[in-house]
Image 1 (spheres, rainbow, N blue to C red):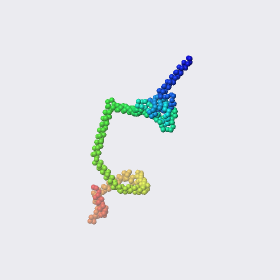
Image 2 (cartoon, one colour):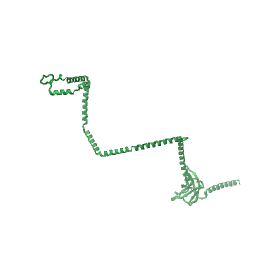
Image 3 (cartoon, rainbow, N blue to C red):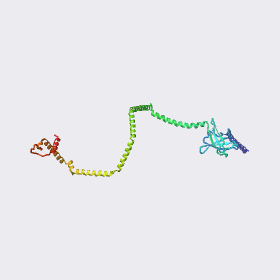
Image 4 (tube, one colour):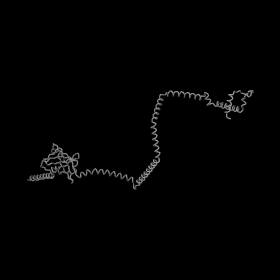
Length: 338
């Protein structure tokens, strides 16, 4: 009797646990006594998909999400429990994850066109249809990143501006004053250049006219220039054919003779050395010239001492000269300085 009571209590507990598990599965939309099929889908982002979320096909619920399991690649493996046994899934079918405006997630089955069908516990391909929240997140995150980068650059720029400006903006004022002076100097320089150009416009015009005239003259003298170049070419050919080597040898021979003569002069040989280096010969010549000058002067002063002409048959005295010699002597005396 005692064992019968314990048996009843244990049986009651088992039935209660079974009913609890059945109720939990039932609440999840899983009928434990039906021939449901199981498929797997791998999502990198389940967007709030939880066990019990609906699986729909053309607006009709055909199953529920049984579980979400994280695999070794950090992807979510979603277990799909399909209660609709009459619906076959082609191999190219997709389990499209959708999110409503309120943030509720579900799976929409999109059938493919393959002739091969998925079997129980096969993996179905996935697809996404993001809701407003996810779309906003996808758009906002890159913008947020760019804004953060822009803010960092702006902070650096402001820091640089603050460094340039200083506490009272003195650096900026100095920079503006220097820039103003530079602009003023540049304007003055441009004005000076403009004045110079204006003042020299006539000279520039004349220079250009002269250049044009020179160009025209060169153009007119093109034939002469061509002939000149041709003559120069002929002269070059003549020089090329000339016996330059023989001329150089003759020149060397002449220089050798001159060198020999100079060596003789330096060694004391010949009259040239006596004329250049010996004063005695020069002194003798100077003395002779002086004596000659005195003799000529004496003859000019006292000609009767040296010349006597026969007049009327008188007796001749002195040197006898004929008429031609007398004329020459008189002419020589007249040319001597007093």
